[in-house]
Length: 96
Image (cartoon, rainbow, N blue to C red; front, side):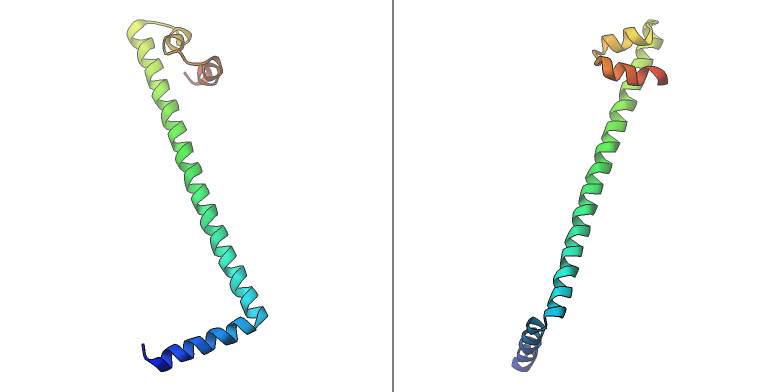
């Protein structure tokens, strides 16, 4: 860059810094961008966690059904063998 381009940019930034309305607009826009980026990051992580939870649930259902098929156990017996907590057993029972 030439010296004149640097001077022009410096002069423009000085004018910008003196205009309170423009500076507030800039600050508000930067805050909105940061809020958006944070929201997107949080949403992605929530989606990943939901996907992991769904995968774990499907894996457990598969294991329960396999035990029932291969051993002739009831759903309760299979879940007990897998040492699933009672609250999880109650959630899975209706869909087995």
